[in-house]
Length: 254
Image 1 (cartoon, rainbow, N blue to C red):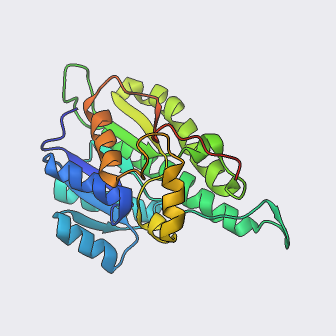
Image 2 (cartoon, rainbow, N blue to C red):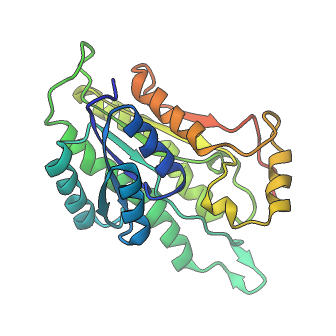
């Protein structure tokens, strides 16, 4: 699918991977709505990029429906939906103080997995109403964000790994179901990328993490993730897959 002139939504678009993705889509001629938590950060990102700010909690059905209504009113029904919203939590399943906090686990699943599913189901439903845009009968593309933690979750990453494993597993059944409508679904499993979350770590820790990446020996750049999103959108044969973008790193147990 060509990006120019297309309506798109990007969750988590106010920062990090989502911001870079929105910037690349806008540079390619797309009309983009940023779905993120309401606030100054979202408003500033939208102003800087020339995007629509549509504040919402991605796991809230009513809030996402309202945000999609905003996007449709401004840009038309989105043919591209990219989910980058997510949180990272850590903690052992059984730690020194006893079993893990269930509320923390549930919140991680709610934002990362249920939020992704919620946006996908609501966006895909609207995409089915559109006319195809090319000879393949393509109507839309959905790109979700998993993580290499889905496959090599480390000790202390149970909640995060479980949530991202669910995102990775969604790609194939969703792609098979939506095939009749000409809607593709894929996921990206990024490795260690330089994002605001990574900025919270000391510089020596960041350098140590980067040193463990076989090649290139550096953290990934947000625009490299965004470039992968663009390639998925433009390459119609990518469907039902979860693509690793990680410099060949494989996470150790801890």
